[in-house]
Amino acid sequence: MRPRTSSGSPADIRALPPFVRLLDATQPAFHIGFFAVLPYLAEHLGGALGMGGWLVGLVLGLRTCSQQGLFVAGGALTDRYGPRPVVLAGCVLRIAGLLWPGYAQGTASVIAAVPCVGFVGRAG
Image (tube, rainbow, N blue to C red; front, side, top):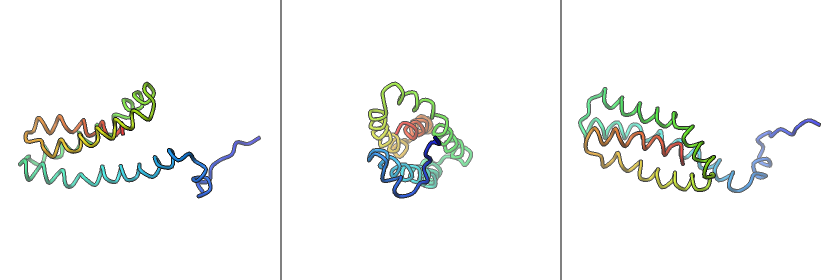
């Protein structure tokens, strides 16, 4: 007997549990929002904080690298504690992590905030 494969049709999507459908619907919004903030963050770092272009590039690269590089940590936490507490904690951390760079006044604070933002991109 051949295993049934999903065609991605609306009927297949409706057959998924509500939690999975909600997750599927929110993930594109999270990713679009996460990357849409890059120009605003670059303006804030270069304009309001007066960082040089190389430092703005370093901070944005660190942010993206930490987001993409922390899949393992988010997966390990999910394996250990389950998806529900990790997703809820990730949402709370996401709010704090995205506000921190907006209030950071110095280079060290911004550089400390950016990996936090990357981590919440994986935990949430």
